[in-house]
Length: 301
Image (cartoon, rainbow, N blue to C red; front, side, top):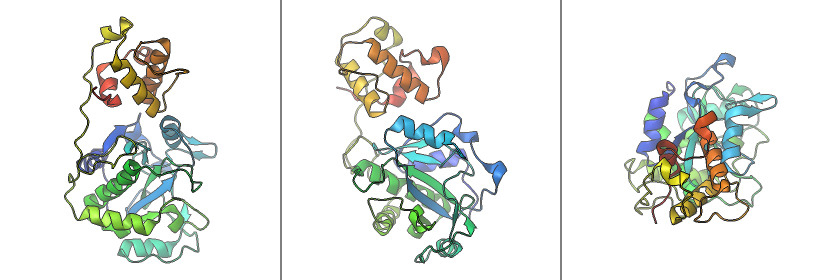
């Protein structure tokens, strides 16, 4: 059993493991603690979202849905292998599950079959939702799988747990199928290997369908060109690379492109990115600023 990680410790643990971390909106004070216990903590639970698109998936997990208020997890792992933190405290992700499974997790033993729902999992597990349709056909990019391994390892390191403290929702609550598309035993094997290395080994994670780090150097990023650059309707490959990153973040308002000429579609797409980061009003006018540009991580040509 363990005391829950503070927001600062969670961010540090994930970044030390080489992960790209986004702190979404008011996640540090977003929780369901008034509805029940939060802790002691015993493990990490992995889910799939049954959604597509980073922006909409993150918002759903932050806000919740009718009859099930958010946060629906503590973090969302997107297809690019980046982590979006959406909750800090009790979250509506695990529900009632098998007390015998919890006993096995506490003892870090092989799991029994989950055949009852008699124990509150929201109090005892960190939850991470991974963006996937959960239909058995939607692929799991290498960067995303590597991020799942590293997220799990980061929390296990912080609490001095081993890989048997990581379970799938399908191993906790009867009738659940998530995560679908890989086995939890194979995931735990990778987590075990990761825990045998130092946290920073293997570089960082991200960049789509690549090897999620794997020793490759991180791409050099385009420095912020200044707000005036965008007011002058530039024609530059920087705009193309920016647009491609906006598309990958689910912030596209493009019907054609993106291309090198700054257009209204670029401005609207960037405004969507600013809103995704939690900006509003004049701070989400679609003209890039230094902080939102830094977080977009536009690669240098």
